[in-house]
Image 1 (cartoon, rainbow, N blue to C red):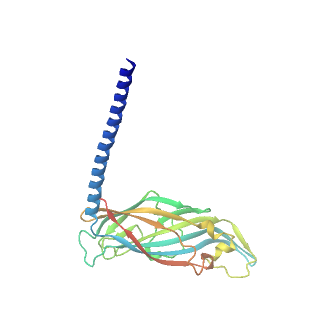
Image 2: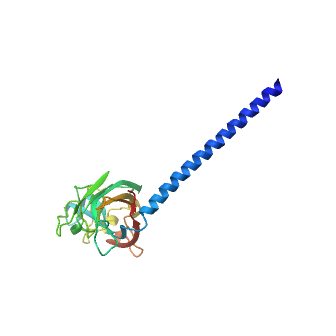
Image 3: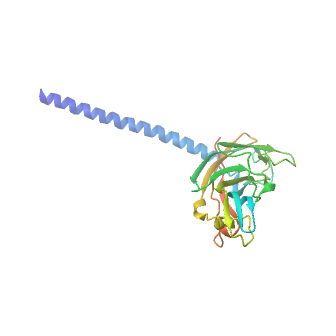
Length: 264
């Protein structure tokens, strides 16, 4: 009797093991087939590059409001560091058609990989005609999502988030880190105050406390209603290898290889 029970238990255990192996095999085949199907579909949609970003121009500087000044001291309010950056969308063709022209563009999924240790950082849309100007912005901030108007007109008001449908103008944004110093007095003002990165040193701001890095996604829909996605990473430059922001300003032109992958 005991041998019979033991045999039954062994058979049950073997059946359970067999069932687990078969279930695992089935799920593996289904998953692989599904993965292969998705991979083939993705590869089929991305046989050629329609849109890409091959150039990014960045300009970093500082500015502040002049609260009061005298012959012996200088008081500033709201010292801020800003980096304007322009992302140039390339439609990889000399001729425009429904496939390589814009129907809609939006950016979302802002992620800070590294936040500055001090200040209050925010990102805004910026008119390209004001690129590198140290103005504080209060409209068209990019937090959750920023959608662009798309225009086919020869001349368009770029004071609102707008892109030409033929990719003629870049996406221009401004990273502004405010309130690094408030009501701060620079004593013994024996030299001229420059409204640039040299203010950081005069106000005792360590450059590495401003290190930042962030990413966001850009979505493009073309005039065939195909959708594309590209993730962009931005690191506001504080040093270019030969000088730092405390010496004045930093300008960088980067050759990038951000590709928009078709997702629909």
